[in-house]
Amino acid sequence: PWNIALQTALSLLMGAVSSVTWALFGSSLRPLLTSTRMVRIFNIAMAALLLASLYPVFMDALCRNAPCRNGFPLKRKML
Figure (cartoon, rainbow, N blue to C red):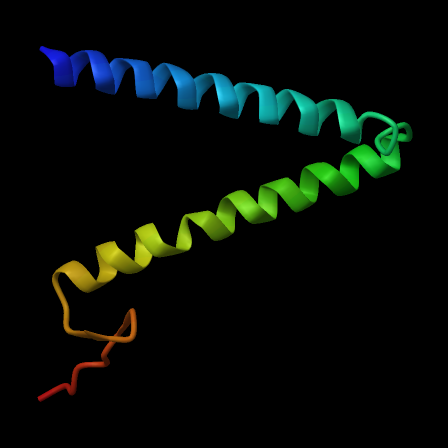
């Protein structure tokens, strides 16, 4: 039970820190995102980063059932 309390306290602390960081990041970007063009550029950049973050997931799924080298599936020779 003391370890559950410690994990709960640590999770609450990390959640509070990340929420404050996210809020400060958002408020500091507000002056930069005044035009619709800048908002669109920001949204496209965030979408690209989100898609890039999925790359390791797909590589792991590809390499789960096939031999891989450096995260890339090896091509199998056809008989």
